[in-house]
Image (cartoon, rainbow, N blue to C red):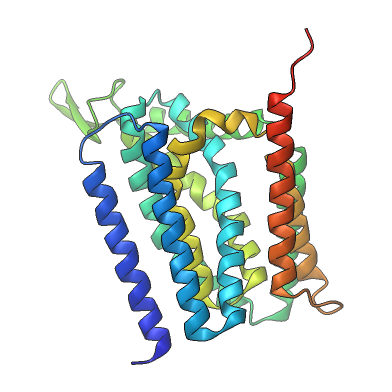
Length: 305
């Protein structure tokens, strides 16, 4: 069997098995405690690392390093997305016990859309000028991340929610974890389904930043798609594991902005200097470490009265 085909089969089997395990563990709506979410997050991280090791042995050091680098970058960018999820759940007043189901269906759609976008992106990267277009997009995204106000995302999601509520037949109240309900014998969508749709739309917006960034690290579809999906599928458990401490990560967005600027420079200066993938990995890990440690230190520092 061809090694490339074998790798895709291994990835699909692992992903499907983990998704089934996730469904079994969350058959009923429930509040997910941090301890349980941390265990599930560890399962996804270990699975991604195991697949990365598999890539190392099957295809060599370069593709293995590309996978690990792309996975870490996507995971770090996904953390920034979690802030938006909190805002979305707040807009639709979704209780904790129903948030996992909303994320499950919202992120599941991302699996399909990311594949489509990456197939297009890999083809576009065959044209040299596209590299510079992606570099400009990432530079803009970096500056937006560094200087945007926290209220910007909330305002955008609020407008989407208001528009959908006005133009779609929507029940004013939740009906358990159902997506549809009947009000006066009329079939209507519940706020939970609207929440899922907004999460899908938000992911499409996130993809405009993350896909050019990962394409700057590698144009290998196997590497970039599998690393992306492992990060996305583990996002639900990560959300419940750290959502209580997200507000304390005050410097994280600056770290992500610096990383995006670095990736933009990597694209725009590709003809001048070639940055090894190991150097990219080291830079990303170093920046994330500094911003997380700085955030934790700022959290523990006593506030002036």
